[in-house]
Image (tube, rainbow, N blue to C red; front, side, top):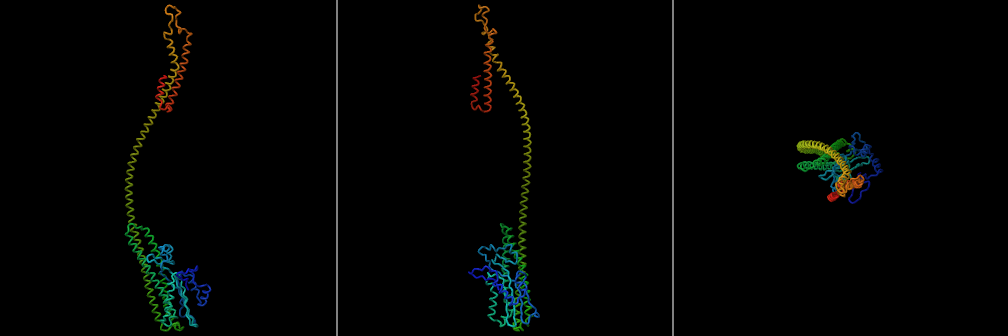
Length: 475
């Protein structure tokens, strides 16, 4: 009884992972073989440690003989993801669980674990022996799944012994030898992968451009996955060895009963015992090889740790040298900063002194500006007074000249020749002349002041000199 066996060119059914057996057929098998509940429970919990049940000769039924056991299997198969470069089969977190497969990148294979359950029953009344073989292996590797059955068929057709077809232990030795060969191949590939890891560490240790973080991450993850699987292999090989020893003991103890029931001849004990001894020796060598691989895995991990420590020490030395250089540069920068700080302090002191001098000069300039403003006010007052009184005094001075006060008749005219400006009634002439001239002076002063203000505000443009000339002409 097994899963769907994949055939080339034939599409897989949707229930390819299920056994090719309906519930009603399995119920019929349980009834026909009278399967024990422990065997059925072990099949339902296949990931639990394998179990077995071999009754003692005193417990054998007078009419039937039955026993069962479950054998752990590890098979190496080609990785089905070669075209994608093992992208989905690279060593990852899921492979830390030894119940899952283990991908080995160097030999490009996967080591996949499984179980094979065997149930044997002999009915003395019908003189018929039956074996129920429950194979949990993946049907994608059809050749591996069918190998034990084909070997048993070949042995039965060869008829090396007349009773070999009914002897349960003879059939079990054929099955166990296939399982041991699978184990040997898997451990050999395991060894090849360890050697590849070791060579990679030693070769890349000399590469100065190697990124050790990536190397340590990938190699360490792979080695820890392999170590986890090796521990699981140890328990499975031990259980397999115990099962073989139970088969050997059961073969010896039940020989008389088997001969009595007609299952084997009386001279078959030595042949079967020798075959089981050979299996035990092969299994012992596999166990020793697994222990050697365990030590080798530890050594490679130690090598990886040593390489990592050397790299870390080198990085630490480089880091220390870099830190020393940075400290020296920092000290030099600090000294330069101190010098720069001193210069800046001197500049600040000079700036402070200049600021004080500027403030004193500003105060003096302000005082001078106030004095100039007062002088300007005084000068303006003087100018206004001058404009007010200068025309009148000037005209009065002109009118007081002798040629305005002399007689027109000369000496012979007596008193009647006195000038007209000498009379009080002629003051209106001074008033008539003084008032317009004074008004004209004030108007000229005002116009000239406005023109000067415009020049100071920049409104005069380039005509300043011409304006000054005009003003001079007006003056």
